[in-house]
Length: 163
Image (cartoon, rainbow, N blue to C red; front, top):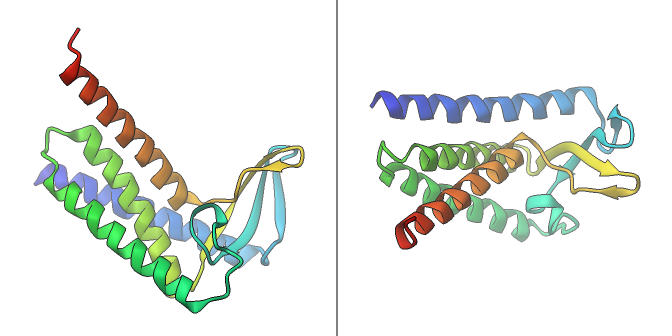
């Protein structure tokens, strides 16, 4: 149980950090306003993302898209919670990855429910080529997914192909 408490605190901390950064962005910047952090590479730019990850479907004004994305996000969250609870205490890397994914999913679902959009603000670019804007929650989901995929790949390779 002590181990689970750590993960729950970790998830809560990351979700709060995500919401805090988004609240600060909304407080200090207007939509589409940008602040240069590292010239030529990194801006803080306040964007309202009504679509999915990396702005996919962001241009849609359909309330059905919003409802569909919120419901899909909620079911994905339930799916990840299920696997998180099923993972054994010895599978710490998997639990860490799922914790990151849970924190990120929770942060973005909170936005969708209470704001009607997800606040994105991390704007990375080189010259005129911009990576789609993202936030702390998206970072948690992406890092968690990479850790999970690598863990599964290395776990399978050690099972099927022992050295």
